[in-house]
Image (cartoon, rainbow, N blue to C red):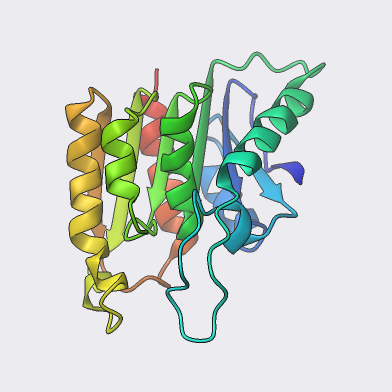
Length: 210
């Protein structure tokens, strides 16, 4: 695992986001906001971002290995090392992601108390058993932002098609747990404007996460 600060920022608000592709564009959209995006790199999506084992959702794809808990432990250690010795005075720390990384962001919000806000943009909240996990493990963030493309619930795969009602229910669960929560629909399918959707969520949640 490797952490890399992207773009400019004061370090007062850090948001950790899984991914390398499109991170530069996301950081550009955050420019001037005071938010420093930190890209989490060198990980395996299906293995490290899945909170427990589950069968594949895609024809020809590999199963989800469910090593999210150990990945989160390594991530928290990497964050400590990354922030150590820097001149930054971190006031707010967030975690965000797109697709399966959006699922992991909410998992981390429930599994630890190290983040002030969480962002799940087009998150894979159809994941087996995840809503039950959220109900039994209250989120420990102050703010959360969830979004989804309005065409995503029209997926031909019945498992993926549950994402609309699952995301709406996740937002209700978070709000009932006292988390300042916002859920937004975006035009388009899962693959439209990922950096814009993610950066919009980060800015929104960062403002409310203190």
